[in-house]
Image (cartoon, rainbow, N blue to C red; front, top):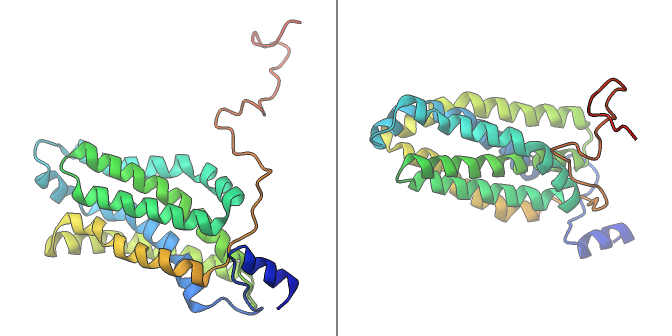
Length: 233
């Protein structure tokens, strides 16, 4: 065993032989965009049954189940990607998926709309952590075909997920209940969290970098000379 491989093993990594990624590694990393994208669109088919089940809520209020997920995902995506660089992408991928599963279980058990919206926010947060980490893990794998093809497969998984969302959601809502459309994620994610440490190596961490500043306080340009906010020292 090489010195680098021994070091990776001591750090909890599993050194991969040069070549193409294993089928399991590809499947696990593509689960990220697939499940995240499917949960963007799956709720479109669940709006009528949710409205009927949660008495006293209207169509506009129920539509926030889509909006809450999308807004949270967009807001957390960049900081979560930077956090993955600092903490390790595999660790962030598993943690994001676990948070996503917790949000899914909350949605499935929600007794009213506020709890359902909280579950969607938790889902969006976990999705924002898992998706960029999955791409980072995939691109870190050795591949004879090159990163561009790996990225294409990853993006295709997201496209398939967003296309299947309304179909899967509608079928589950008709055959069982809209709650199962959220609950079905949980065993899939549990299996992925167990298999990920065995199939994917941890990436190098970069603890010296700083997280993005949402207010841009440390990178704000100086106001122009004519600005009333410019310092008059």
